[in-house]
Image (cartoon, rainbow, N blue to C red):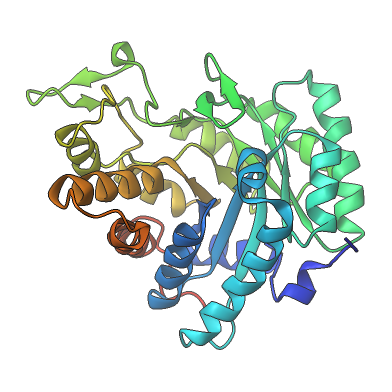
Length: 335
């Protein structure tokens, strides 16, 4: 299939979006999706809250949904937003945790407006070289590039690490200068998956729920001093709402010791140079909770629409609340 530019699909890159977010003291929501219901919910919530939004796709999600279908789903997302009453949607299609130059290139050639190249597990110089190679290819096509410095713990699709390693503030100037990346994902204590921390890292409340340790805002402050005004990204930032965990376990699920990042800490981060916050696990939990509850209460239902509609409705509710109360992006579509 012939290469296509994201501009032909009606998408935008992150450059202006991030500049406005830093100036306005809010963060752009970056929600992962891999099926139609998730995408519909993300777009509906963005339109209803008048928020710009980033549709994120991991390598695994791309394999699941098919690259060609995704291209047209993204184009459909833009048209859907217009149909819902948004005259000028601000939608980014972003590759999350691109593992190689080849995957990033393929996404750019297939209509992605932004890509992440994750060389964080490589030695520093190799991370620089890989990121620079992707930047050169992307910038020639007006596509923005997110890089990563530091290692996040946890598991998400193909990305996994035993433990997190905080980003070293002394490396950031050299890294962004040498690579030319447009934004930088850093590690300050967030992590992937539904278990952001081990029970040993937390305190346990009287109700048995884990209370996580605080994020390393001192590291974030040091990084901001080194590269003032540069767009910073937080990965692994789902709050893992306990109401969804409880519903899933009430209706047969087993997801013990699920713990996320407290939303007050995410709001604090969003007011700084953190202008993009990645949320994936919360969407999975909301959807699974709604599906499990519906099927338990309606054992005769077998039409997927019967249980996916309440799941989609729950996603819209959750994404809307995140945009308004946590990320602060609501109302900033026309900045």
